Amino acid sequence: MKPRLVSSVLLATTATIALSAAPALAQEPAVSHHHPGPVALVASLGWYDGAAVGAELRLGPVGARATAGGNLIMLTVSDSETEEIDSFHAFATGQGNADLYAFPVRFDNGLELGVSGGALEARRQLGPRTGLRAALGFTVFPDGEDRLVEKEDFPADAEFNFPLGAGLQSGLQVALTYDLL
Image (cartoon, rainbow, N blue to C red; front, side, top):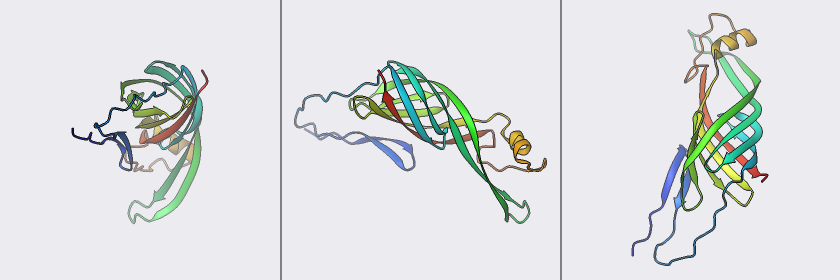
């Protein structure tokens, strides 16, 4: 018999999750993988939603998540002609997030793949009550450039050079979950 190949899912250029790696020669008893409980606390950190805490309400592979936290924003201001950096700005924003999600794909090893508001997600229970989730997605900041000009006193003719614009940012988020029920 041939050994099974190792499969993986690339979540970001530096993050890979192995899906399976076991020889097919010997039949081993099935491993019992924990399933997420119906209510969980969430603590997350990353470039998608910043640092946040909240809760999840789950009904099998679908659910709702609400978190509150903040995001650190760092900007450099450059002269448009010389491209020399004139100044550096760092400030924080408070934010609330609410997501509906679904995890329709589940592998034998307990890894689940799914989607939420603006992200692709992977999750896996690490133990009876703890889980790990990673999300790669987009966050929308309505009128992002106008708000920066207004709140941070940038000149009205300032030109922002964000990869996706000031109203849309992307990033990777990692979260730990703790099942209450």
